[in-house]
Length: 231
Image 1 (cartoon, rainbow, N blue to C red):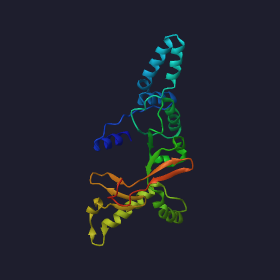
Image 2: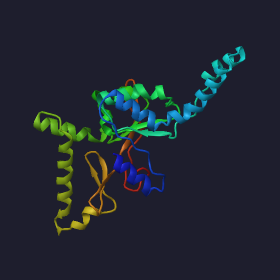
Image 3: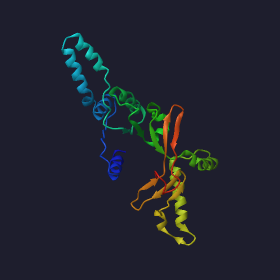
Image 4: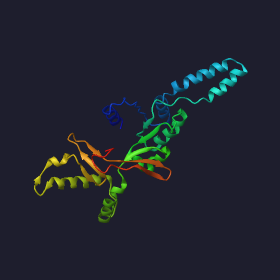
């Protein structure tokens, strides 16, 4: 995810993202969060003024220090935070962010499609966004697959079904046409629209969901064609 983020931001002409990796454990997560949020430089000037006011040793100095302690610190040097974590690590990060004044009303948290599963601990980042296929496009395939095999399809089954469907189009009644693989209009697959690019990459039309207390909420539907915005 770090490599993909760096590649896409550079392709869009944006500044290179600040990326931090951390080993497991609260101590490492705390240090990475403090470093990434630039907490020392945001809080340092206020702490210095508090120290100077207290050093006066006067009633006015003490009152000034008390007021300075209440001073909000500047926001972190970012307004969006992409997290790749799940499980305990995600819950630990969610707990640490407020401690270093990463205000969730100012910073939007985004993450992977894995967060659709509550078992990943995604409930700890309520309000966060993630992109994933719209499950409503899969319902017919899931119904037919379950009826035939007695169990719901795994994500790998989606890929196999789509690959077979594309192969059937290529091997049409008039012979093979491998140029169809990279046709600009793409294909309608089990999980929505997708394009096969000449360099081997795949682009998919994904929906955007927001994590709420009752579960994921669709906030931006998946594009329905290759030329639609967000594809």
